[in-house]
Length: 247
Ligand code: ADP
Ligand code: MG
Image 1 (cartoon, helix red, strand yellow):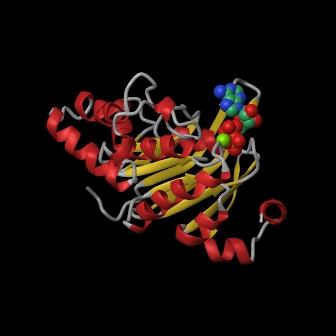
Image 2: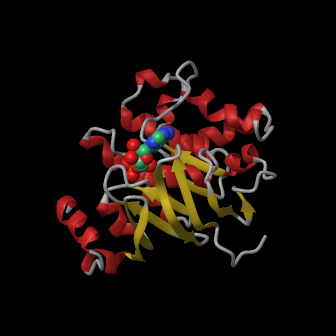
Image 3: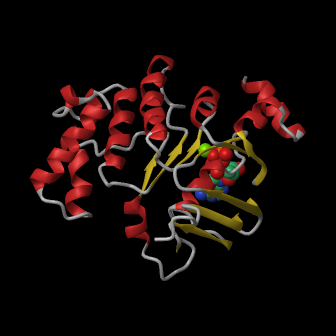
């Protein structure tokens, strides 16, 4: 393992949906080990597409993406094993509805990582404690609030011992009173040194733990700056306009 290379390296990526619509335009971005990068920008600017390209859920047309040195964009890279190493949490919680919480946390460990049942269960219980959900281990997703489901989704991703975590607007579908409980879990992950790429408009989160803020608009990375600079002195008119709307 090369510890000085970026954990996530996106270089000159272009992507089209169909022939006529270019969704990503010459995007380059790197996330070093232990770094937290917040990606923001108007709806439709390509944030979800970019983050999905990082673990190969969407193909790129040209450019390269490497995760921990392995080229996601190289056809010979085994995407399932890469995805097992990069945790992803979406806006909608996407737990397995027919499995209880404990089963949701064990299935990937057992099927993908081939952990034994008791080891998987011990790991799951430790993570449930960490996200404050120990009392709910036998409930089904449908019996939980959105905030609780999202904390389980994070715990499920962590059960795979990811080398990095990708978040795509993890709190934007939640009622306001549940946002904090999810952000608190994310803040503690960041503070423990997890490498994170987080699409969010929660600028409180960005101010607290982001190392850098990336601003996207119309498929382009318009700014990639230290967070303080982004908030205090955004360089582009597009970022100024965006900040004036959300702050
Ligand atoms: P964001 O997450 O910033 O809102 P997205 O990456 O979801 O942006 O979408 C960027 C643009 O690509 C939008 O115009 C969206 O409508 C379009 N788009 C997203 N997914 C697809 C798809 N699978 N096929 C065609 N167009 C898509
Ligand atoms: Mg999106």
